Image (tube, rainbow, N blue to C red):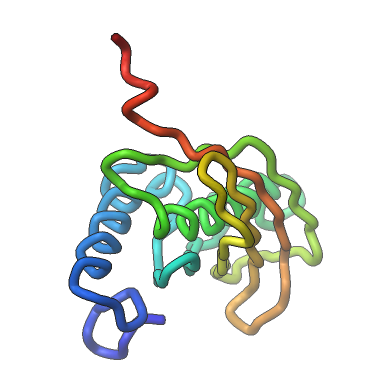
Length: 159
């Protein structure tokens, strides 16, 4: 999704969408200690879609020497949630996972993992999203289906 050499992470968008996407990426990359901890980064955005990358390696392996299922589930959830975030008002709304199902299709050892997330349906309070996690050569590692609650931050503030 990124334009070669420009450093842009999203498809052609309006200036307003570009600013919004920049804030989403900044929030995820600079504001999420968990993304940093496991080596996850946003690689691309477009309305209702996202691409994430997970730098794999021994630090996220399980005892069997393969990428831990929790790390795979993390990038699957993040890709779907970030896809939804592209459709939300960042100042007022946040996605919150309320259910996720992941099918693990094949193991991964040292391959960096890439996840594509997309919004299946967005309602006013509930959204359904999906993601697919692959290796750089396109081998499917996992597929997910998730349900998110759209949290209205104004309603969540203490009185």
